[in-house]
Image 1: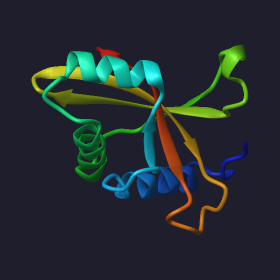
Image 2 (image 1 turned 90 degrees about the vertical axis):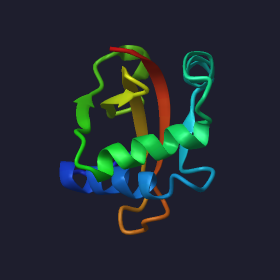
Image 3 (image 1 turned 135 degrees about the horizontal axis):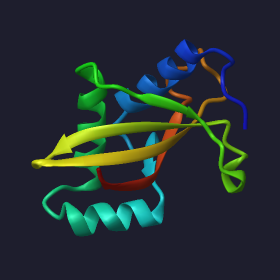
Image 4 (image 1 turned 60 degrees about the vertical axis):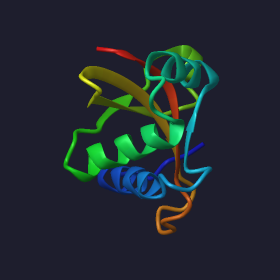
Length: 118
């Protein structure tokens, strides 16, 4: 899997995926992350969480791009972290991005791979 070479293009792809938060297939959840969210934030649906992620970034929230160092995840060049305040709790989201065509706003997808309280 390859991502665009420059950081700004990767972040544009990331934002494009989040803009599609209301549609299935653009922002997904690894099973362990989904289970945590459903258990810890039972009043919110996964759709609500996708909207929270979008709104956070839309308001200028920080997306921390990290070079992936863990050998077991070396097939991902980067992961992207966000820390949101949801329901009075500060929640950490670790996500990965796929983007084959940076010029196609409907191409990028995000998967939440890990989530927990900060």
